[in-house]
Image 1 (cartoon, rainbow, N blue to C red):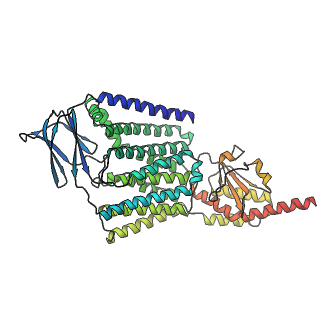
Image 2: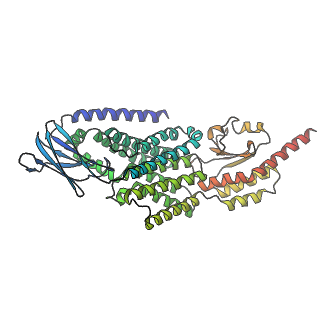
Image 3: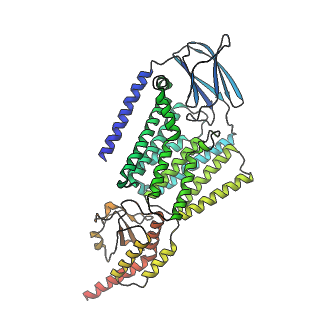
Amino acid sequence: MFKKKYLIISLVIFSLILGILIKFLSLKEKDFIYVIPKIKNMEILDEQIGEYSLSNKLNDTHHNFENKNFLNGKIFLNVPNGNYILKGKYENEVKFISFTKESPWEEIEIEFIGNQFSKKEEYFLNAITLSLIVLNLSIFFKLKKQLKEDKTLYYTSFILFLNLILSFRTTKYIDIIKILDFLTVTILGFTLGFYLINKFISSKYNIVKKSFISLLFISYLHSFIITLIIISPQIYTYLLLNFEYLIKVIRFIGKNISLSRIIFLIILFILFSKKRNLSKNICWSFVLIGYFFLESFNLFFPNLTGLSNFLRVLTYVSLYWGIVFYSLKVYNENVSRFIKFILGFSLVYITLFYYKNLEQPTLVLAIILILDFYNYIFDKIFLRKSYAIEKTFNKLVLIKEQEQFETQLRHEILKNTNLKMVKIKIFKNYDDQDYIIKRDFKIYSSNLFIDKKDIYDSEYTSALRIPFGNNPCIGIILFKDSENYLGIDEINYLTGTIEKVSSLVNSIRLSLIYEELASHE
């Protein structure tokens, strides 16, 4: 842990020093004009928007200054001081701006109308964002105690909420919001990427882990350069004139090796490196297709700019809570409800943003079909094996002897899961727990899992308590799952089996107590 913190701190310090050095070297760059299009609903990282040209103000002579695309605008190089007219064209709108260049470099803002919404529509769009924040907060507070056990996920949630707040639609997208928005989503992405690698990829795939870490580092370089460019166009000019090849590489990385795409590949590897039946893999494939669609929206619809910020936020919201649900083993009706709301909010937002009419039959039908389809897919993933649970119960219901019951339950668990090491123990009294689990282990009413740190036997990585009535633990199922091979359906099988057989376990426990009392008489 110390080594990781040292590496992170070293990387941050190195980045700051390098950034200051590049900024210092770029101060000599001059004679350029940076054109910033101010178009409502457009973002600084959208592709170059509009057409721009410079002409002399005195004789209306058009100058063929060298120009380059810069973020969502244009930069003109080798422009001497003088009087100029900037011509900007976006869609059917043409604007002329007269200005005098007196400084070493100038920053010119040109405003276009862009997509227009009424006040009510603006309020409605922000209401959707607010609803998304409230939804995330409700899930956060329900899982707050468990999240605190995982410091990475807990503190990452605050970055997520900051990014959600920054996604509100404002009349003026000021520079500090641009930088904060970009930095928060970047930090969020890297945190989740490294968490997935460290938590879910086994050490036996060491080469794969190093490959993913290398890709994340490449993406970090891209994000680092983009951050510097957002802060100062002088830096971009300096890099363009002195390291043009680096700019080309950065553009290539941005288009083909984006951070969210690397995370997609990590998730793809994690899911398909585990042993699952074909139907589960097919269901997870559709989930990944949905994630890939959100992540690659601009690739499929390059002309539909303006939605990428919301969809990027939605991508990371879905990714964060997906990791939380999977990592903390929280699978219940709230998860399914959360997924439905996320899909509903995104579809309503997209539909209103572009079509402004939810009454169109085809769109309404599409919304219904998509929601119904994903509802079916996630129900398949989170489906509890009721037939297997019932079969297990039937084999245990007539067993009255403790050792035979524990052996049979262990056999059923091994048969219905991918676990290789399982141990069952029924506690006759509280003192029996002292040799297996710590007496003061934390109990969550909605979670049957006991963490590894609360188990004395180091051979086992996790455990499930068997509650009955007001007694939180009358028995325990210990198992080894060091490589996280346990799937959602298997976890649901285990928790469902515990709910079903807890009365049988209590019956055997009472029999043991009566036998002990009888022996003392």
